[in-house]
Image 1: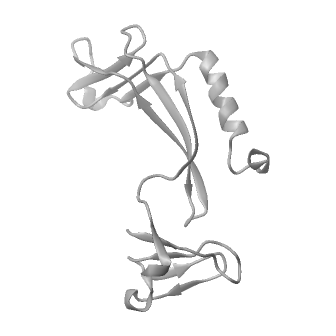
Image 2 (image 1 turned 90 degrees about the vertical axis):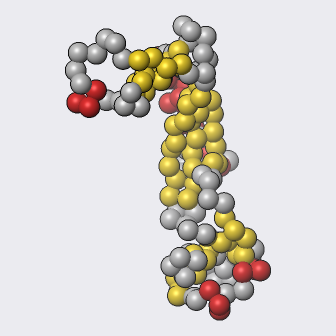
Image 3 (image 1 turned 60 degrees about the vertical axis):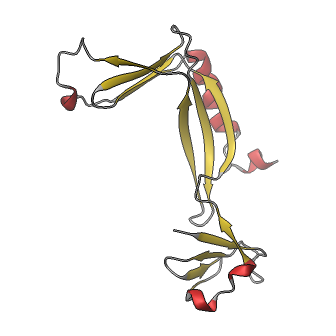
Length: 156
């Protein structure tokens, strides 16, 4: 869904103006109106990228992450010197006026074939395991509390 933001804000409410090419609507803080594409001058708009709009992020080392893909376990572990990390970020969705927290992981991974399971993996309730050191958990919680963009203090 291509979404465009106008180069200048709404003259009435001062908020950003967005044009949705799928719904063919123009929306800002004060109004939402139907506008066919042929009636909109897209030269006054800038395309909003599809990727997540990260506004704050921090990276934390973790002990391990593993997940099951249906056939193999993919594992990144500190003991194997694979250096797993968790990236915590706040993502802004201006059109919906909401913010989300995103957890992403990186490191070197290795694959292991399951040889120790006693239950059929299709019956497993859990498919992803993340092990975080308690010291890092304190830092993660501090980041989430202090950098929360929904809190006024985080902008000052």
